[in-house]
Image (cartoon, rainbow, N blue to C red; front, side, top):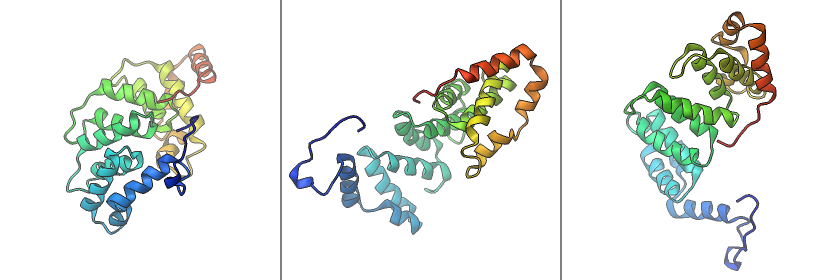
Length: 213
């Protein structure tokens, strides 16, 4: 844990950090889920990830959530995916917040749509500098979906997405959409906003600072 020091017991000399020791112990107890995953033995891998996640292993929780989301366990289960992503979201993980937001926005699978919840989650992720959440918020405020239309706020989020996408567009397709405005929201708003409104949005961008998710 950042900012704290731990006394390392003599019996655990081989572990530099307690978190590393815990991860090593979990692997020893339950086996390596990644090995079974690569062998496409997904049920066994998921059982290992679940046991590790229940002991607080966030990376195991992420892998388990992804497996439920992608239907690796006999059909997509978005309720379980959201549950395990929530373990990461509770720690401020912006990517996990984004995944849950998508599930609630579209009401995927066995999860009922909850647009207000989706906006809350996108906003938390966007404030933590998640690029596509910023772009998605811009789209929702432009279209007036789940929130009243607010073109200035929409343009602010779209400009932030463009700015922050420059660092990830080459390796991430959604970042590339945000950078190049794949759906044309920025272009559309430039036609709709007055000069003063454009200036206001740009000022809000200049004063924006990321927050923990």
